Image (cartoon, rainbow, N blue to C red):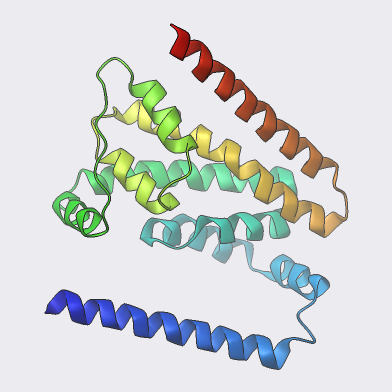
Length: 211
């Protein structure tokens, strides 16, 4: 009964958020241009943006929103610096949370959502971490906690998992930065880097399958 009410409240909150967003867009549609959105991103207080970037993704807020805002506010280079710092913080904090007294609650919540903690082979935690963080699947927050709940060691979780996420952040941060400066050079570089990484990954998987 309690879960039913929680589910109804989630639906009600979701409908309310969508309705408010729709009304906001309707009454401000003429002023919502690319320039106004860029100006808004650049006007955000840096400290507040970084603080919310550190905390909200750990609570389930979409990471993609902060990647775009980081690119708008800080540009590509400093945007990636801020993003890297926040991603590493998420991994440190996420691992601690997943191994604290909240572990059982996270496991129950993941089970209700249909997500199972994956099994990790003792001889392949590094490759498992790379694969798990690379493939499309659950949202960033879910993947963060699910991987932290496995037997993957802390150093591999942080120093292998975080760089993989950071590499995939290059494209949205670069795209937002390019929109500010009207320079698509870094966007092309980001696409090239991501594409090269994807090709290398597929090549490695084929070679590994043959062996």
